Image (cartoon, rainbow, N blue to C red; front, side, top):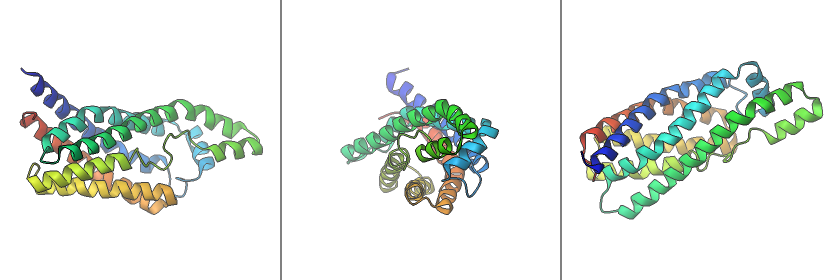
Length: 224
């Protein structure tokens, strides 16, 4: 077994695992009720009462971000065409977004319990201060966390569609995911719950299919 085959199999395994984990995105809808996504105080109160769902979600998202380091290079190699530097740039954005995502979700996992308890037990001044700070997110508008991965998805799927490296439906699904990741960034910037819910719903439906499908494809295609 040569090293390129090993790398391709690693990418395949990571992609399939990513697809399975993305099913848990539905937890986001369950854990954060409508009307409270951009209300830090209400979030901390809910989290203090039931931290398990959000903790599981953050662990899942951190795991997806780590798995991306196995997925992104392999998918980039799969769709490699006459635009190698474009693929490299897209891979870089995807990896940067994944790195920030992993650190951000692990930071929230570690610090949210203390902040939530301090909020519910604090006086009005303490609550106001904690709510003003909010969750310790490295990328509060998800410009890299979602936008970087979205840019990668857009580039690799457009190239795959152009060159026939992925089935048309598969590539179009990936382009749709990229667009809605951009919508999620806009939702975070303008604090639109409706856009946030739509983007999360599209991700929960499309991401498992796209990643598992690409994982199967990687397992059948020798690395370039």
